[in-house]
Picture 1 (cartoon, rainbow over the protein chains, first blue to last red):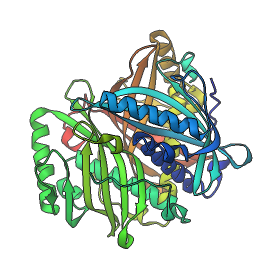
Picture 2 (tube, rainbow over the protein chains, first blue to last red; picture 1 turned 180 degrees about the vertical axis):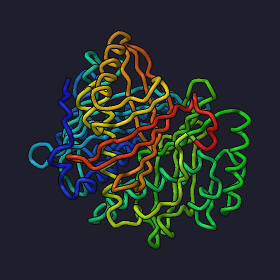
Picture 3 (cartoon, rainbow over the protein chains, first blue to last red; picture 1 turned 60 degrees about the vertical axis):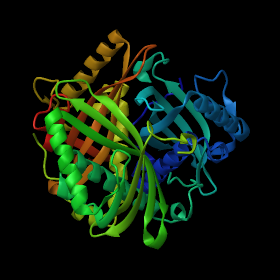
Picture 4 (cartoon, each protein chain N blue to C red; picture 1 turned 30 degrees about the horizontal axis):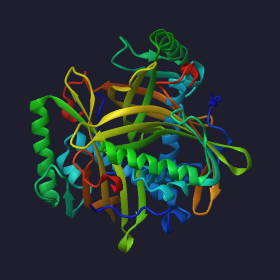
Length: 159
Length: 159
Length: 159
Protein backbone atom coordinates (compact mmCIF):
# COMPACT_ATOMS: atom_id res chain seq x y z
CA UNK A 1 0.00 0.00 0.00
CA UNK A 2 1.17 3.49 -0.72
CA UNK A 3 -1.19 5.19 1.67
CA UNK A 4 0.05 7.85 4.03
CA UNK A 5 -1.31 9.55 7.06
CA UNK A 6 -3.77 12.23 6.08
CA UNK A 7 -3.09 14.93 8.60
CA UNK A 8 -5.10 18.04 9.07
CA UNK A 9 -4.74 20.42 6.10
CA UNK A 10 -1.17 21.58 6.17
CA UNK A 11 1.08 24.27 4.88
CA UNK A 12 -0.38 24.29 1.41
CA UNK A 13 -3.93 24.81 2.65
CA UNK A 14 -2.66 27.70 4.72
CA UNK A 15 -1.39 29.51 1.64
CA UNK A 16 -3.49 32.39 0.34
CA UNK A 17 -3.97 30.83 -3.10
CA UNK A 18 -4.71 27.25 -2.09
CA UNK A 19 -8.27 27.38 -3.45
CA UNK A 20 -6.94 28.56 -6.81
CA UNK A 21 -4.53 25.60 -6.96
CA UNK A 22 -7.18 23.16 -5.79
CA UNK A 23 -9.69 24.23 -8.45
CA UNK A 24 -7.07 23.95 -11.18
CA UNK A 25 -6.16 20.44 -10.08
CA UNK A 26 -9.85 19.50 -10.21
CA UNK A 27 -9.97 20.85 -13.75
CA UNK A 28 -6.86 18.92 -14.67
CA UNK A 29 -8.48 15.66 -13.61
CA UNK A 30 -11.79 16.44 -15.34
CA UNK A 31 -9.90 17.06 -18.56
CA UNK A 32 -7.68 14.00 -18.14
CA UNK A 33 -10.59 11.65 -17.45
CA UNK A 34 -12.62 12.98 -20.38
CA UNK A 35 -9.68 12.32 -22.71
CA UNK A 36 -9.39 8.78 -21.34
CA UNK A 37 -13.08 8.01 -21.83
CA UNK A 38 -12.97 9.37 -25.39
CA UNK A 39 -10.02 7.12 -26.10
CA UNK A 40 -7.91 10.10 -27.11
CA UNK A 41 -4.73 8.13 -26.63
CA UNK A 42 -2.19 10.83 -27.44
CA UNK A 43 -4.14 13.62 -25.71
CA UNK A 44 -4.41 11.53 -22.57
CA UNK A 45 -0.78 10.42 -22.62
CA UNK A 46 0.23 14.07 -22.92
CA UNK A 47 -1.24 14.75 -19.46
CA UNK A 48 1.54 12.54 -18.04
CA UNK A 49 5.25 13.26 -17.93
CA UNK A 50 7.42 11.53 -20.53
CA UNK A 51 8.71 9.10 -17.91
CA UNK A 52 5.49 8.65 -15.93
CA UNK A 53 4.84 5.42 -14.02
CA UNK A 54 1.26 4.16 -13.77
CA UNK A 55 0.41 1.26 -11.45
CA UNK A 56 -3.01 -0.32 -11.46
CA UNK A 57 -3.90 -3.79 -10.13
CA UNK A 58 -5.53 -4.94 -13.40
CA UNK A 59 -2.17 -4.72 -15.18
CA UNK A 60 0.60 -7.19 -14.45
CA UNK A 61 3.28 -4.53 -14.29
CA UNK A 62 3.44 -0.75 -14.05
CA UNK A 63 3.09 1.12 -17.34
CA UNK A 64 6.04 3.41 -18.06
CA UNK A 65 6.13 6.37 -20.43
CA UNK A 66 3.72 8.05 -22.81
CA UNK A 67 3.95 5.52 -25.63
CA UNK A 68 2.91 2.64 -23.40
CA UNK A 69 0.21 4.75 -21.75
CA UNK A 70 -1.22 5.61 -25.17
CA UNK A 71 -1.11 1.96 -26.21
CA UNK A 72 -3.27 1.07 -23.23
CA UNK A 73 -5.91 3.57 -24.31
CA UNK A 74 -5.98 2.10 -27.80
CA UNK A 75 -6.41 -1.37 -26.35
CA UNK A 76 -9.30 -0.08 -24.22
CA UNK A 77 -10.84 1.48 -27.33
CA UNK A 78 -10.78 -1.81 -29.20
CA UNK A 79 -12.25 -3.70 -26.24
CA UNK A 80 -15.06 -1.21 -25.81
CA UNK A 81 -15.81 -1.08 -29.51
CA UNK A 82 -16.13 -4.86 -29.42
CA UNK A 83 -18.27 -4.93 -26.29
CA UNK A 84 -20.34 -1.84 -27.11
CA UNK A 85 -19.79 -0.51 -23.62
CA UNK A 86 -19.10 3.11 -22.70
CA UNK A 87 -16.95 3.65 -19.61
CA UNK A 88 -16.90 6.85 -17.56
CA UNK A 89 -14.20 7.55 -14.99
CA UNK A 90 -15.22 9.86 -12.19
CA UNK A 91 -12.90 11.46 -9.65
CA UNK A 92 -13.94 12.88 -6.30
CA UNK A 93 -13.03 13.55 -2.68
CA UNK A 94 -9.78 14.99 -3.94
CA UNK A 95 -7.13 15.73 -1.35
CA UNK A 96 -4.16 17.84 -2.46
CA UNK A 97 -0.95 18.29 -0.50
CA UNK A 98 2.48 19.63 -1.26
CA UNK A 99 5.05 17.11 -2.39
CA UNK A 100 8.81 17.34 -2.89
CA UNK A 101 10.33 19.90 -5.26
CA UNK A 102 7.17 21.83 -6.06
CA UNK A 103 5.22 18.68 -6.86
CA UNK A 104 1.75 17.99 -5.51
CA UNK A 105 0.58 14.75 -3.98
CA UNK A 106 -3.07 13.97 -4.49
CA UNK A 107 -5.32 11.23 -3.15
CA UNK A 108 -8.86 10.82 -4.39
CA UNK A 109 -11.59 8.28 -5.01
CA UNK A 110 -12.25 7.09 -8.54
CA UNK A 111 -15.44 5.46 -9.74
CA UNK A 112 -15.93 3.67 -13.03
CA UNK A 113 -19.40 3.56 -14.56
CA UNK A 114 -20.22 1.39 -17.53
CA UNK A 115 -23.18 1.56 -19.90
CA UNK A 116 -23.88 -1.13 -22.48
CA UNK A 117 -25.47 0.04 -25.72
CA UNK A 118 -29.20 0.22 -25.08
CA UNK A 119 -28.79 -1.17 -21.57
CA UNK A 120 -28.71 -0.01 -17.99
CA UNK A 121 -25.78 1.94 -16.59
CA UNK A 122 -24.03 0.47 -13.59
CA UNK A 123 -21.21 1.13 -11.18
CA UNK A 124 -18.30 -1.06 -12.25
CA UNK A 125 -15.60 -0.25 -9.72
CA UNK A 126 -14.60 1.87 -6.71
CA UNK A 127 -10.92 2.78 -6.53
CA UNK A 128 -8.49 5.01 -4.67
CA UNK A 129 -6.07 6.97 -6.84
CA UNK A 130 -2.83 8.53 -5.63
CA UNK A 131 -0.85 10.81 -7.92
CA UNK A 132 2.26 12.86 -7.94
CA UNK A 133 1.76 15.95 -10.09
CA UNK A 134 4.48 18.21 -11.43
CA UNK A 135 4.20 21.55 -13.21
CA UNK A 136 4.29 21.23 -17.00
CA UNK A 137 3.54 23.24 -20.05
CA UNK A 138 0.02 24.63 -19.68
CA UNK A 139 -0.72 23.04 -16.31
CA UNK A 140 0.00 19.95 -14.25
CA UNK A 141 1.29 16.60 -15.43
CA UNK A 142 1.02 13.23 -13.68
CA UNK A 143 4.47 11.83 -12.93
CA UNK A 144 3.37 8.82 -10.90
CA UNK A 145 0.00 7.16 -10.32
CA UNK A 146 -1.01 4.28 -8.08
CA UNK A 147 -4.57 2.98 -8.25
CA UNK A 148 -6.00 0.49 -5.77
CA UNK A 149 -9.37 -1.21 -6.18
CA UNK A 150 -11.67 -1.58 -3.20
CA UNK A 151 -12.70 -5.07 -4.25
CA UNK A 152 -9.10 -6.30 -4.36
CA UNK A 153 -7.59 -4.34 -1.49
CA UNK A 154 -6.48 -5.94 1.70
CA UNK A 155 -5.94 -4.12 4.96
CA UNK A 156 -8.58 -1.75 3.74
CA UNK A 157 -9.40 -0.23 7.07
CA UNK A 158 -6.51 2.11 6.50
CA UNK A 159 -6.81 2.27 2.70
CA UNK B 1 -23.16 14.91 -31.78
CA UNK B 2 -22.04 18.27 -30.52
CA UNK B 3 -18.73 17.07 -29.19
CA UNK B 4 -15.60 19.00 -29.88
CA UNK B 5 -11.95 18.29 -29.58
CA UNK B 6 -10.83 18.63 -26.01
CA UNK B 7 -7.42 20.15 -26.36
CA UNK B 8 -4.96 20.71 -23.61
CA UNK B 9 -6.13 23.43 -21.22
CA UNK B 10 -6.05 26.61 -23.24
CA UNK B 11 -6.02 30.34 -22.86
CA UNK B 12 -8.59 30.41 -20.10
CA UNK B 13 -6.67 27.97 -17.94
CA UNK B 14 -3.61 30.12 -18.42
CA UNK B 15 -5.32 33.15 -16.90
CA UNK B 16 -4.43 34.03 -13.34
CA UNK B 17 -8.00 33.70 -12.07
CA UNK B 18 -9.01 30.50 -13.82
CA UNK B 19 -9.43 28.58 -10.57
CA UNK B 20 -11.74 31.29 -9.27
CA UNK B 21 -13.92 31.02 -12.39
CA UNK B 22 -13.86 27.23 -12.30
CA UNK B 23 -15.00 27.06 -8.66
CA UNK B 24 -17.84 29.49 -9.34
CA UNK B 25 -19.04 27.43 -12.28
CA UNK B 26 -19.02 24.35 -10.06
CA UNK B 27 -21.12 26.24 -7.54
CA UNK B 28 -23.50 27.38 -10.28
CA UNK B 29 -24.17 23.77 -11.27
CA UNK B 30 -24.56 22.58 -7.68
CA UNK B 31 -27.17 25.28 -7.13
CA UNK B 32 -28.91 24.62 -10.45
CA UNK B 33 -29.14 20.85 -9.89
CA UNK B 34 -30.44 21.27 -6.33
CA UNK B 35 -33.21 23.55 -7.61
CA UNK B 36 -34.11 20.97 -10.25
CA UNK B 37 -34.30 18.10 -7.78
CA UNK B 38 -36.45 20.19 -5.43
CA UNK B 39 -38.80 20.92 -8.32
CA UNK B 40 -38.32 24.65 -7.82
CA UNK B 41 -39.58 25.36 -11.34
CA UNK B 42 -39.17 29.13 -11.39
CA UNK B 43 -35.91 29.13 -9.47
CA UNK B 44 -34.43 26.58 -11.83
CA UNK B 45 -35.70 28.30 -14.96
CA UNK B 46 -34.12 31.54 -13.71
CA UNK B 47 -30.68 29.90 -14.01
CA UNK B 48 -31.21 29.89 -17.80
CA UNK B 49 -31.36 32.85 -20.14
CA UNK B 50 -34.81 33.98 -21.28
CA UNK B 51 -34.24 32.41 -24.70
CA UNK B 52 -32.32 29.31 -23.60
CA UNK B 53 -32.46 26.15 -25.70
CA UNK B 54 -32.34 22.80 -23.91
CA UNK B 55 -31.91 19.57 -25.86
CA UNK B 56 -32.21 16.19 -24.22
CA UNK B 57 -32.89 12.87 -25.96
CA UNK B 58 -35.90 12.03 -23.79
CA UNK B 59 -37.83 15.01 -25.18
CA UNK B 60 -39.09 15.02 -28.76
CA UNK B 61 -37.91 18.56 -29.45
CA UNK B 62 -35.64 21.10 -27.77
CA UNK B 63 -37.24 23.13 -24.97
CA UNK B 64 -37.07 26.88 -25.57
CA UNK B 65 -37.38 29.66 -23.01
CA UNK B 66 -37.95 29.85 -19.28
CA UNK B 67 -41.72 29.20 -19.32
CA UNK B 68 -41.30 25.88 -21.10
CA UNK B 69 -38.33 24.95 -18.94
CA UNK B 70 -40.39 25.61 -15.81
CA UNK B 71 -43.30 23.58 -17.21
CA UNK B 72 -40.98 20.59 -17.57
CA UNK B 73 -40.01 20.79 -13.92
CA UNK B 74 -43.67 20.88 -12.87
CA UNK B 75 -44.33 17.81 -15.02
CA UNK B 76 -41.41 16.05 -13.34
CA UNK B 77 -42.80 17.02 -9.95
CA UNK B 78 -46.17 15.44 -10.72
CA UNK B 79 -44.56 12.27 -12.04
CA UNK B 80 -42.34 11.88 -9.03
CA UNK B 81 -45.14 12.61 -6.59
CA UNK B 82 -47.11 9.84 -8.30
CA UNK B 83 -44.23 7.37 -8.36
CA UNK B 84 -42.83 8.27 -4.93
CA UNK B 85 -39.33 8.45 -6.36
CA UNK B 86 -36.68 11.03 -5.50
CA UNK B 87 -34.25 11.90 -8.29
CA UNK B 88 -30.79 13.41 -7.73
CA UNK B 89 -28.79 14.91 -10.56
CA UNK B 90 -25.05 14.90 -10.05
CA UNK B 91 -22.48 16.75 -12.17
CA UNK B 92 -18.79 15.95 -12.38
CA UNK B 93 -15.64 15.88 -14.46
CA UNK B 94 -16.42 19.46 -15.44
CA UNK B 95 -14.36 20.95 -18.24
CA UNK B 96 -14.61 24.71 -18.76
CA UNK B 97 -13.31 26.60 -21.78
CA UNK B 98 -13.78 30.07 -23.21
CA UNK B 99 -16.57 30.48 -25.72
CA UNK B 100 -17.48 33.34 -28.04
CA UNK B 101 -18.23 36.81 -26.69
CA UNK B 102 -17.27 36.19 -23.07
CA UNK B 103 -19.33 33.01 -22.86
CA UNK B 104 -18.02 29.77 -21.39
CA UNK B 105 -18.37 26.34 -22.93
CA UNK B 106 -18.60 23.51 -20.47
CA UNK B 107 -18.62 19.74 -20.89
CA UNK B 108 -19.26 17.45 -17.96
CA UNK B 109 -20.70 14.09 -16.98
CA UNK B 110 -24.12 13.94 -15.36
CA UNK B 111 -25.45 11.06 -13.30
CA UNK B 112 -29.04 10.56 -12.22
CA UNK B 113 -29.75 8.60 -9.05
CA UNK B 114 -33.24 7.52 -8.10
CA UNK B 115 -34.58 6.36 -4.74
CA UNK B 116 -38.05 4.90 -4.32
CA UNK B 117 -39.74 5.61 -1.00
CA UNK B 118 -38.49 2.98 1.42
CA UNK B 119 -36.48 1.24 -1.30
CA UNK B 120 -32.93 0.95 -2.52
CA UNK B 121 -31.21 3.81 -4.33
CA UNK B 122 -29.89 3.08 -7.77
CA UNK B 123 -28.04 4.70 -10.64
CA UNK B 124 -30.62 5.56 -13.29
CA UNK B 125 -28.56 7.14 -16.04
CA UNK B 126 -25.12 8.31 -17.18
CA UNK B 127 -25.11 11.38 -19.45
CA UNK B 128 -22.78 13.92 -20.99
CA UNK B 129 -23.88 17.54 -20.67
CA UNK B 130 -22.58 20.40 -22.80
CA UNK B 131 -23.53 23.98 -21.93
CA UNK B 132 -22.93 27.46 -23.14
CA UNK B 133 -22.89 29.84 -20.16
CA UNK B 134 -23.19 33.61 -20.32
CA UNK B 135 -22.74 36.17 -17.55
CA UNK B 136 -26.01 37.21 -15.94
CA UNK B 137 -27.25 38.99 -12.89
CA UNK B 138 -25.57 37.40 -9.88
CA UNK B 139 -23.61 34.78 -11.78
CA UNK B 140 -23.75 32.59 -14.86
CA UNK B 141 -26.80 31.59 -16.90
CA UNK B 142 -27.19 28.63 -19.24
CA UNK B 143 -27.95 29.79 -22.77
CA UNK B 144 -27.75 26.44 -24.48
CA UNK B 145 -27.63 22.86 -23.20
CA UNK B 146 -27.24 19.57 -25.02
CA UNK B 147 -27.50 16.34 -23.03
CA UNK B 148 -26.61 12.93 -24.48
CA UNK B 149 -27.31 9.64 -22.72
CA UNK B 150 -24.70 6.91 -22.73
CA UNK B 151 -27.33 4.22 -23.20
CA UNK B 152 -28.72 5.88 -26.33
CA UNK B 153 -25.54 7.32 -27.81
CA UNK B 154 -24.04 6.03 -31.00
CA UNK B 155 -20.48 6.64 -32.09
CA UNK B 156 -19.72 6.73 -28.41
CA UNK B 157 -16.02 6.15 -28.71
CA UNK B 158 -15.69 9.87 -29.34
CA UNK B 159 -18.62 10.97 -27.16
CA UNK C 1 -36.85 18.89 7.85
CA UNK C 2 -34.19 21.53 8.10
CA UNK C 3 -34.30 22.56 4.48
CA UNK C 4 -34.36 26.18 3.55
CA UNK C 5 -35.12 28.10 0.43
CA UNK C 6 -32.19 28.00 -1.94
CA UNK C 7 -32.26 31.45 -3.47
CA UNK C 8 -30.15 32.61 -6.33
CA UNK C 9 -26.50 32.93 -5.35
CA UNK C 10 -26.39 35.69 -2.80
CA UNK C 11 -24.02 38.09 -1.15
CA UNK C 12 -21.30 35.53 -0.66
CA UNK C 13 -21.22 34.54 -4.31
CA UNK C 14 -20.94 38.22 -5.19
CA UNK C 15 -17.74 38.57 -3.21
CA UNK C 16 -14.48 38.66 -5.15
CA UNK C 17 -13.02 35.63 -3.35
CA UNK C 18 -16.04 33.34 -3.37
CA UNK C 19 -14.38 30.78 -5.65
CA UNK C 20 -11.42 30.62 -3.28
CA UNK C 21 -13.73 29.92 -0.32
CA UNK C 22 -15.76 27.40 -2.30
CA UNK C 23 -12.70 25.40 -3.37
CA UNK C 24 -11.39 25.30 0.19
CA UNK C 25 -14.72 24.02 1.48
CA UNK C 26 -14.62 21.29 -1.17
CA UNK C 27 -11.16 20.35 0.03
CA UNK C 28 -12.35 20.33 3.63
CA UNK C 29 -15.04 17.79 2.80
CA UNK C 30 -12.70 15.62 0.72
CA UNK C 31 -10.32 15.47 3.65
CA UNK C 32 -13.09 14.88 6.20
CA UNK C 33 -14.66 12.04 4.21
CA UNK C 34 -11.31 10.33 3.60
CA UNK C 35 -10.61 10.37 7.34
CA UNK C 36 -14.03 8.86 8.00
CA UNK C 37 -13.58 6.05 5.47
CA UNK C 38 -10.13 5.26 6.90
CA UNK C 39 -11.67 5.03 10.36
CA UNK C 40 -9.29 7.69 11.64
CA UNK C 41 -11.53 8.38 14.61
CA UNK C 42 -9.56 11.19 16.23
CA UNK C 43 -8.57 12.82 12.96
CA UNK C 44 -12.17 12.84 11.80
CA UNK C 45 -13.52 14.10 15.12
CA UNK C 46 -11.00 16.95 14.98
CA UNK C 47 -12.75 18.28 11.87
CA UNK C 48 -15.75 19.08 14.10
CA UNK C 49 -15.99 21.67 16.85
CA UNK C 50 -15.69 20.43 20.44
CA UNK C 51 -19.45 20.84 20.93
CA UNK C 52 -20.59 19.73 17.46
CA UNK C 53 -24.03 18.17 17.01
CA UNK C 54 -24.44 15.46 14.38
CA UNK C 55 -27.92 14.22 13.42
CA UNK C 56 -28.40 11.26 11.14
CA UNK C 57 -31.53 9.14 10.81
CA UNK C 58 -29.71 5.84 11.47
CA UNK C 59 -28.85 6.95 15.00
CA UNK C 60 -31.53 7.22 17.68
CA UNK C 61 -30.33 10.56 18.96
CA UNK C 62 -27.96 13.29 17.80
CA UNK C 63 -24.28 12.69 18.56
CA UNK C 64 -22.72 15.50 20.60
CA UNK C 65 -19.04 16.33 20.95
CA UNK C 66 -15.80 14.93 19.63
CA UNK C 67 -15.52 11.96 21.98
CA UNK C 68 -18.89 10.57 20.93
CA UNK C 69 -18.16 11.31 17.28
CA UNK C 70 -14.90 9.38 17.52
CA UNK C 71 -16.65 6.49 19.27
CA UNK C 72 -19.00 6.18 16.31
CA UNK C 73 -16.09 5.84 13.93
CA UNK C 74 -14.57 3.09 16.04
CA UNK C 75 -17.90 1.26 16.06
CA UNK C 76 -18.01 1.56 12.25
CA UNK C 77 -14.48 0.22 12.06
CA UNK C 78 -15.39 -2.88 14.06
CA UNK C 79 -18.51 -3.49 11.97
CA UNK C 80 -16.65 -3.17 8.70
CA UNK C 81 -13.79 -5.33 9.87
CA UNK C 82 -16.38 -7.99 10.74
CA UNK C 83 -18.28 -7.65 7.48
CA UNK C 84 -15.24 -7.16 5.25
CA UNK C 85 -16.91 -4.22 3.55
CA UNK C 86 -15.23 -0.97 2.52
CA UNK C 87 -17.43 2.12 2.59
CA UNK C 88 -16.73 5.29 0.62
CA UNK C 89 -18.56 8.54 1.34
CA UNK C 90 -18.81 10.90 -1.60
CA UNK C 91 -19.95 14.54 -1.45
CA UNK C 92 -21.20 16.57 -4.38
CA UNK C 93 -23.49 19.30 -5.63
CA UNK C 94 -22.17 21.46 -2.81
CA UNK C 95 -24.00 24.71 -2.16
CA UNK C 96 -22.29 27.21 0.17
CA UNK C 97 -23.93 30.27 1.66
CA UNK C 98 -23.09 32.70 4.44
CA UNK C 99 -24.45 31.84 7.86
CA UNK C 100 -24.58 33.83 11.08
CA UNK C 101 -21.42 35.21 12.70
CA UNK C 102 -19.01 34.36 9.92
CA UNK C 103 -20.21 30.77 9.69
CA UNK C 104 -21.04 29.05 6.41
CA UNK C 105 -24.11 27.01 5.71
CA UNK C 106 -23.65 24.21 3.25
CA UNK C 107 -26.07 21.82 1.58
CA UNK C 108 -24.84 18.96 -0.55
CA UNK C 109 -25.65 15.46 -1.68
CA UNK C 110 -23.83 12.53 -0.10
CA UNK C 111 -23.52 9.07 -1.61
CA UNK C 112 -22.30 5.97 0.16
CA UNK C 113 -20.67 3.20 -1.87
CA UNK C 114 -19.89 -0.18 -0.40
CA UNK C 115 -17.56 -2.88 -1.68
CA UNK C 116 -17.43 -6.36 -0.15
CA UNK C 117 -14.04 -8.06 -0.22
CA UNK C 118 -13.75 -9.70 -3.63
CA UNK C 119 -17.27 -8.65 -4.58
CA UNK C 120 -19.05 -6.04 -6.64
CA UNK C 121 -19.23 -2.42 -5.54
CA UNK C 122 -22.67 -0.94 -5.17
CA UNK C 123 -24.43 2.27 -4.26
CA UNK C 124 -25.67 1.90 -0.70
CA UNK C 125 -27.39 5.19 0.00
CA UNK C 126 -28.27 8.66 -1.32
CA UNK C 127 -28.41 11.40 1.31
CA UNK C 128 -28.66 15.16 1.68
CA UNK C 129 -26.20 16.72 4.11
CA UNK C 130 -26.58 20.16 5.68
CA UNK C 131 -23.73 21.62 7.70
CA UNK C 132 -22.87 24.72 9.61
CA UNK C 133 -19.14 25.42 9.31
CA UNK C 134 -17.13 27.77 11.48
CA UNK C 135 -13.54 28.93 11.09
CA UNK C 136 -11.09 26.90 13.13
CA UNK C 137 -7.40 26.30 13.41
CA UNK C 138 -6.12 25.47 9.94
CA UNK C 139 -9.48 25.63 8.15
CA UNK C 140 -13.17 25.04 8.68
CA UNK C 141 -14.83 22.93 11.36
CA UNK C 142 -18.32 21.42 11.32
CA UNK C 143 -20.41 22.78 14.18
CA UNK C 144 -23.71 21.18 13.21
CA UNK C 145 -24.65 18.49 10.71
CA UNK C 146 -28.03 17.14 9.67
CA UNK C 147 -28.16 14.19 7.27
CA UNK C 148 -31.38 12.99 5.65
CA UNK C 149 -31.67 9.77 3.63
CA UNK C 150 -33.64 9.76 0.41
CA UNK C 151 -35.08 6.32 1.15
CA UNK C 152 -36.46 7.46 4.52
CA UNK C 153 -37.39 11.05 3.72
CA UNK C 154 -40.99 12.19 3.58
CA UNK C 155 -42.18 15.34 1.86
CA UNK C 156 -39.24 14.81 -0.44
CA UNK C 157 -40.42 17.08 -3.21
CA UNK C 158 -38.94 19.94 -1.22
CA UNK C 159 -36.12 17.94 0.33
